[in-house]
Image (cartoon, rainbow, N blue to C red):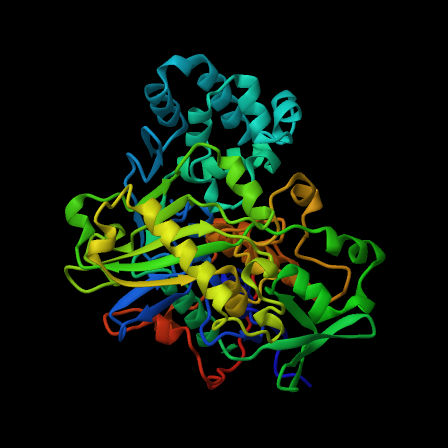
Length: 545
């Protein structure tokens, strides 16, 4: 008999959230993570003798206000008082910079419209019509506005409203947060993306992205379950048509009647489950699925405290206003000479100083996107399948070329960037695949194209009894807030109960007396590298009706 009721494959935020809710509801859970640290794209890494710390993907988060999705997730686990989210400048959490215009994205749809009109006064009527449609789409899933505009590309709405290229570029300025071409993005998706931050602002977790994973590990392990790192799953076992456990790359088999996959969606079915267990429809669909474009990120440390310059904590810089053109080129495997860049400065996001650099220094995460094709990177076999790439001359040359392009764009915001730079390192789509085993190096999962949204997007349940999904490729979407919340929905499906309704009714599933994470000496990165199973506590009945 297995020592576990549930095995969770992959420890991104969706997997950890799912495991935490199952563990606090009496299930014995085993979380298996191939990497040496949990957290997925929310993790951090340190360099120069731990002098600098960088967030891999936690740049800003929405839905952290009271009653929001993140708040709901934390309250049910008794973490709402343990993880602090810092509200980023309400008057302009992100600066969108296009040639000749800098736009500060505020909180609230009315303020957003007023600021757009201020930036483009000659387009007031067009802007009012466009923003009116977008605002309506956040509240409608049917009706005339939704039927006419919701499922059409956002670029079609822009054209109908007669918006200039500059105004379009500003409204699309933060769409690098989902790395998908506007001409292939339904207007309803971009409307809800805008609403994610306009609704109640943007936030950043005090102490960096690893804080969330560290606390979730504490919840899981303190409630009698186990998290294992450096434990890559090679196969999800299917016996008599049902989930039966997993086989690790080491050959070890672990049985459980329920398996939750937080692994890459395509790899889950193609590699972990196997073609013989797929439905005919799923077998036909897999090759046609498209993933969001992968990120190219440059990590930089400067010998100056950027807070003294009143630097915005977040910015998107566009060398020109052809937003869609960048995506078309990259998707085709081309490398643009100039790169759009999202600038994230952890140093400027923490009012108590910084966890990421010593006094007088700053860190930056500079994000863009790059072709996913192996051929572009001169790679024949990806690292998920054992391929080697890091010393290839053509790979290194392209990596250097893109790094220089990203740095050049960033000088529009920090002119003396190169002079003050004391550390620089870059990661490619191949790097992302190496650490997360994601298809094409994507960090968001399935792209938000019409045929992969709503009822066409995978549910958390599957055709195989006992096998469930969680993470950014499910119908609860990608991004930190969405995947954390999706974990509640997956756990609800496993348990056969609506956990969210119970949380909103005041139920707290975790026993706060068992929690130990936090405090001055607590290091979330160390806590996110569990090396051995904990001593099990007696199993308790934590069911709720």
